[in-house]
Length: 206
Image (cartoon, rainbow, N blue to C red):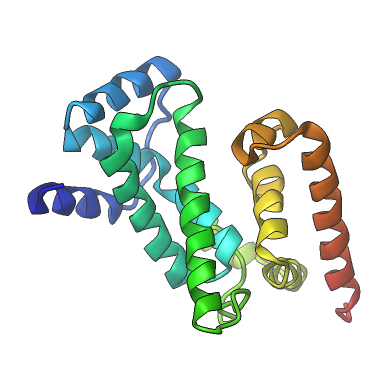
């Protein structure tokens, strides 16, 4: 990737704002343009998915700066490997796998440095970037903050599946495709994650 193209990607990533959701045909056309080297097309995908990618990374890592770093790295990796995407799954599924792998690599790096991979930034509640508005800030309650803090204490695999199901509102089938496992495994892991979350909440004095 050229320095100029890299700059375009990162400048696009830094832009904040809502954008109209692409339909399947539009997204396919944009991906095809990316595969021909169109950096502006990649910028469109970044604007479309930047909050989604950040939310996934934050859900797994539980730390704002780490999530930002992983999100940027994931988009650069997606750009560099877009030619390998063969439309056998949805683009979002392919992109999610990149994000997930980046998160797991990040955790591995913590482990190699003998740093706790579940360490989180306790200075802020577990709230996705695209849901934070002045109205949300005003309506945020102590109960919500307690739930967010409990989520952040769960191990990454539990946070991950709760993010997919509860935050991203994905179906069991979509989660199974993303994680590469059976529906039964999705349901059992989700049950374990919810049980772990409940246990954390029971430790809190309401």
